[in-house]
Amino acid sequence: MADQRIQVMDPHLAAKIAAGEVIERPASVVKELVENALDAGATWVRVEVENGGAERIVVADDGSGIQAEEVELAFRRHATSKLKREADLDRLVTLGFRGEALPSIAAIADVVCTTRANDEAAGTEVRIDSGAFERRAVARQPGTTLEVLGLFSRFPARRKFLRTRSTEAAACLQVVVPLALSFAEVRFEVRIDGREVLRTPGRGTLREAAAAVLGSDADAHLLEMNDELVDDEGRVLVRIRGLCGTGSYHRASRSGQFLLLNRRPIQNRTLGFAVHEAYGSLVPVGRHPVAVVQVDVPPDEVDFNVHPSKLEVKLLRERAVFGAVQRAIRTTLGSQGWTIPTWDAVAPVPGAGLGWPAAGSTLGSETAGEHSGPAAGGLLVGGEQLQALRVVGQVGSTYVVAEGDAGVYLVDQHAAHERVQLEALRASLAGTDAERQLLLEPLVVAAPAEAVLEVERGRLELLRLGFDVQAFGADALLVRAVPALLAQRNPERLLGEAVTALVRQTHGLVADPQATWVERLALVLACKSAVRAGDSLGRAEMEALLRQLGETALCRTCAHGRPTAVLMPFAQLEREFGRR
Ligand code: ADP
Ligand code: MG
Image (cartoon, rainbow, N blue to C red; front, side, top):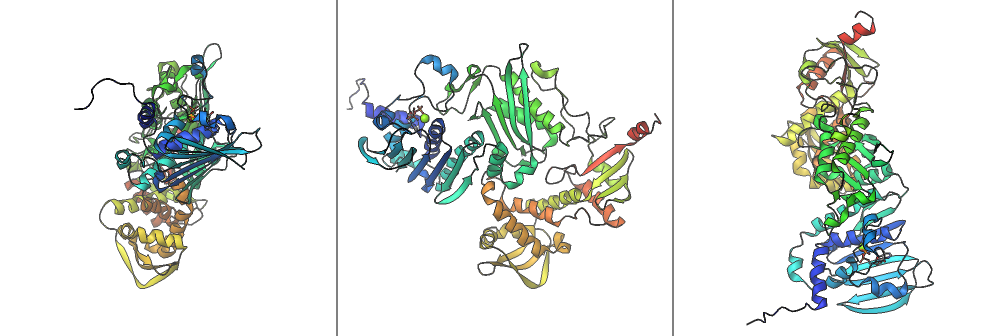
């Protein structure tokens, strides 16, 4: 029978058990090591992940380095240079402070640490192999490289819990992304199995970092936020900065939402809900807005200590922060074309059903009174109204002018048509196969090799869109059929252009795993196939456009979030002309 007496654990075993709490999976290693690099004041951080991180993880930086005689110490439990007294816990400015990461990692993997402190002439390499240290002097620039080999290889039970190589690799990337946004002045580089999946410029602007993370198209749809909540004495209680996406720049998942609290990426249901609420019905049900919300509160008003991975936090004034996040997003949206600046609404259009949440309705009591939302109403146009319009004509070869019961409508022909095309393409993806138009003779379209690969991979989905297309050698596509929907608009060339455009954005799109490749393709196709500003339209075309727009559920905005139509109510005209 086993010995049942209580025993003090062998420290080696204790370290292994503790390690399991800090290091759940390869992504935990990446997170801890990147945080250490940032704490060390690095201006660049390079991350390499091989075989989902189980085989090899490398994190290199140009930070302060570790003194030669302190390297072994850094791998001891509760050894940290960041927290000396309990009182320091209230004003932590570093990401790490527990002194648990390095020993935990060394307990479950082989580690090679190469480092050189700024004031030392040579570097030091320390290998930790099953707990044994081996050191030698090496040449290197100031900074630190941690190489973690064979994670969990001595713990087969643990290793079995790892998901697939690509899932683990994606998780590694996902812990770096919010840090890259929070530390925009640091240049980040992430390579997965040798392939670069993220590179930020490190020039200090959040906008540039966001473009690197979200894709180059993000820039046009992100609005800058800057707001603060001040108490009676003028002390800043909450500062909100960052970027929020326009109302229809949304995703199928929350992958485009980042909350950074005092520069730490966090997850917080309440604040996540504040973001969601701030957009209200601007974002369709089941879709999620894109936002990078930087919240700063006084350091003694937040407790990062509640969860070992520091993702969950406790906030002293959660309600105030909630209100501040909402207000910042709403005022930003409201001030940027999500209302009509010169044509103030007299009253919201009846039946529009897409209005703003009532001002202040869900704000914390602290801010309810001072909420300054967008101008009331915002002239939202509902679908049923568009169908009953009488076309007056076209102005500037760009806008359709129409008259309805409520007033005069101006419709942006490109925005409107883009929305119509997108919804039709989406419908064919969601439902039965799209109507295909067979080409009399198959067409060969040149495309870059990467695009050809993408097309091969997405063949079945493309078929649902209406494209019968396959690889034709390494750098051409053979097109047999095109969607009837696009038949008028040179579809084979469209396909080549759209696929190429998508391939170019690929690395930014990693962050949105849920939007499938073909959904994104539909978006590009919709844009490229829509009538352009400057195309002159006949009356029948304009009437058809308004009718189709009226029939689409999301008629209010184009695929990029710009409004499709604005309304000048008759009541407003009467006021302008002094009739009332
Ligand atoms: P913590 O970050 O909580 O202090 P770690 O176990 O992550 O604990 O690291 C232990 C110590 O090793 C740190 O306090 C720091 O002094 C040193 N260290 C770790 N990584 C680096 C690095 N990349 N550059 C400089 N010093 C480092
Ligand atoms: Mg650390």
